[in-house]
Amino acid sequence: MSKKVTSAKSKEYMERFYSGLQRRNPGETEFHQAVYEVATSVFPYIADKPHYHEKQILERMAEPDRVIIFRVVWEDDEGNVRVNRGYRVQNNNAIGPYKGGLRFHPNVTLSVLKFLAFEQTFKNSLTGLPMGGGKGGADFNPKGKSDAEVMRFCQAFMSELYKHIGPDMDVPAGDIGVGAREIGFLFGQYKRLTTQFVGVLTGKGLEFGGSLIRTEATGYGTVYMMESMLALKNDAIEGKTCVVSGSGNVATYAVEKVNHLGGKVVTMSDSSGFIHDPDGIDAEKLAYIVDLKTVRRGRISEYADRFNATFHQGQRPWSVACDLVFPCATQNEINSEEAHTLISNGCIGVSEGANMPTEQAGVDAFVEAKILFAPSKAANAGGVAVSGLEMSQNSGRISWSEEDLQGLLRKTMTDIHDQCVEFGRESDDYVNYLKGANVAGFVKVADAMLAYGVL
Ligand code: NDP
Ligand code: 2IT
Image (cartoon, rainbow, N blue to C red; front, side, top):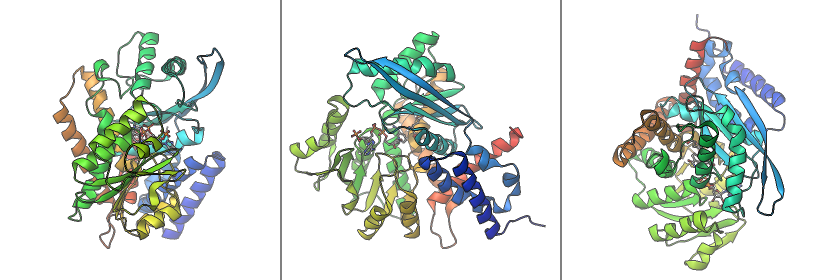
C-alpha cells in the first residue's frame, strides 16, 4: 500500500518543521526565510517518499554541520585597534567540500550567513559539480578603508580562518565586498601561514591560479538563465528593456551580457540609490561604472552627472517600466508592493543575480502571476560553477582556454534550466522554476545523505 501522506498531513509536517526551526534559531529572520522557501517546495515533493521524512533529511540540511565564529583584530591607519567578528558556516558537505563565498559588509550577521550557506548547498548541487555548501564573512565595512587597512583586515581574518579551510575541505571565494583585491590578500596570507600553494580559494588572480571567466561568470550566467527561459517560449532578449540593480561584480557582467544579446539596460544602482538612463547603458558607459566602483570606489550618482541620466536618491529601480528584471545587489531588495508594480508595468521575466533578492511575498506574486521567475539558487549558479572549474584546474595544475570555459558555463546554465523544467513543470504547462530548482537541488544532496546512513 502506498505510504503517500495526505496534503493536510504534509502541511502539518511542514508547520511542525518550520516552528521547530524558528524555535531553535531565534531572531534569524533571513535564515527562516530561506529555509521556508525551500520547504514549501520540498514537503509536497516528499509527500509520497517517506524515507526522506523518516530520515529527517530536510531537518538535517537546515542544521549546519558547524559554525565557526571568531574575533578579528586589526589596526587602522591611525593606529587605532579595531575589532570585528568573523564567521564561516559549513552547512553541508554531502556531495563535496564546503564551497561558497565570503562577504564583508556591516550588515553581516549569523542569520545572513546561515541563509547564504543553506542556499549554497542547493545551488552547488544544481551545478552538477561535487561541491557542498558553505558561506562566511565578517561585519567589516570596506567602504572608505585604504588598501593597507583592507590588507591588514584580510590578513587578520585569514589568521584564524586558515585553520578551518583546505582545498579538499572548504574552499571560500568572493561575495559582496570581497573581490579580486581581497582574494589576493587572503590567498597571500593563507600561503604565508601554511607554506602551501593550493586551490584553497577561488576567484584568484590569473597570475596565481585563477580561472578565466570567473569574474564574468555570475552575471553572464544570470542572463543565460533568462535567455533559456525565454527560448522555451520562442522569445529572446533582443529588443527587451531591462532593469538591473547593483553596480558590483554581478550587475556589471549581467549588463554586459544583456548588451551582447541585443537588450537595453536602463538602470543600475548602489546602496545610495539608482540611476535611470533611458538611452541604455552601453559598453562605454559600463566601463565608466567599472572604473567608478572598482578603482575610484565612488557613488553611482556620479554617473548621472556625467551622462544624460537621472539619479534617484535612496530609491530602488523597480518603478521603472521594463520587460525583464535582474536584481543583482543584495537580499530582500524587492518587496511585495514592488513585485506587483513590476508585474502591472508589464514585466515578463525575473532572473535573480543576487541571493534571495525578493521577499517571500514578492516571490509568491511572481509565481502567482505566472511570469518567468528564476530563483537565485538557479539563476546565479554560474559563478560558483566556474569556481568549481577553477578547483578542477588547480587540482590538475592546468589552465583551460577561454573558449572551453565559456562553453562549459553556457552548458551548465542550460542544464540547470532543464533540471528546473523537469521538476517544475505544472499541469497547465507553466514552469515553476522555484519549485524545480528547490526540488532538483534537494534530491542529489538528500540521496547522498541517505547513502551515508545516520550521521
Ligand atoms: P559587490 O560587492 O561587487 O557589489 C554589490 C553591489 O550591491 C554594489 O552595487 C552595492 O552598493 C550593492 N549593495 C550591497 N549591499 C546593498 C544594500 N544593503 N542595499 C543596496 N545595495 C547594496 O557584490 P557582488 O556583485 O559580488 O554580489 C551581489 C549579489 O550577488 C549578492 O547578493 C551576492 O551574494 C550575489 N552573488 C555573487 C556572486 C559572485 O560571484 N560575486 C555569485 C552568486 C551570487 P555599494 O557599492 O553602495 O555598496
Ligand atoms: O553566492 C555565491 O554563489 C557566491 N558568492 C560565489 C561562491 C563561489 O564559491 O564562487
